[in-house]
Image (cartoon, rainbow, N blue to C red; front, side, top):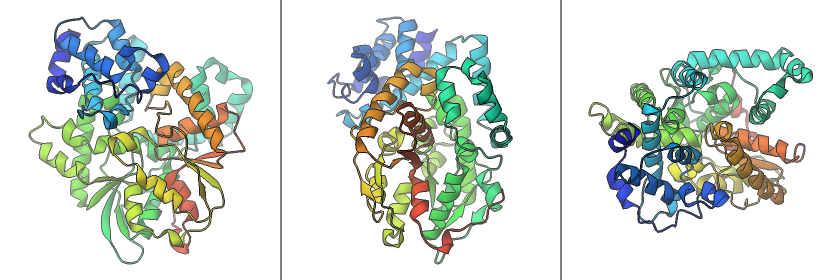
Length: 440
């Protein structure tokens, strides 16, 4: 059954476009870690094609190799044939999920996450409220003192230790408005995509995004009907769920009548830009998806065009940057975050060795593939420590949490902090115009 599902899902023309040149191998983290041909993009494409051609049966080893892929898409920029590997791995995982039978507890967890939680922002906010109570009531301290956390897997303990302060209110609720006017002359009308996890665990980053945009002359619209982007769904083989979320987001932002749509999370932005591909076979939505995708920009692109760094306050510290895989390889945004950091008065920018290599977060990869993720993170932190930076900057929430965990693992607490690019820029943005009233 899996063989038939793969044949139906896979884009065979793109499979055939792979020239087996091997340029992808040095860029692939899992190939570099294992040295196995099957753990490279070229190897995985060969496996996909072998199944589609009827040369092999898709067994457990096949599934394991597809799941070992980070989905970082570092292979795409170096591919001379332009093979969209990210799309192929998502198609393969969708086929696997169509036929695979998980243990009951795995199926239950997936259903709760992908069906009953992520697509419903009010439920995410309620979860955020519970987390906030856990953090602020003293319950978190009590749980840690009793040692109960020791029963959890190591990767979950590490995530709990660095979890940011949660919020039970989303960006729109905190601001008490759907439309936030520009400071001074309006340059454009911007729709802000607030995300699902971002709105719960990184609400301050979302608020800072609004602050920076309004000071830059943008009227910011927070479309009330927007939902989760669907990236975690798409990466986990739940592509139909991702399509449904895409339709809702397209409708929400078309109704908002915005010039552009801004994302502050590389993982979200990459999928938002590919809604046209996700809905390519949906005749009712494809043209609208093209309208949507063409308007998606990362916050760093917008700020690079609009802000005046000479107005920023000085920051006499060493700063380095860990690039978000999907921001770089999916959205093709590479220079803008670095240019913004280099523009901060007084700051010393230090280039991170292999800063473009995946940190091991990759959505929920660090939870489902902890061994590989941990190996990648440990090597990453050796390079980070060598920069002797005071601030480690990234542009994606998953990467940020992974970097915070890495700082703890490497014993760099007190010497270095991990910060989202938006939050760092908000620190140096001067003037009373940055102050916004929020409803806590």
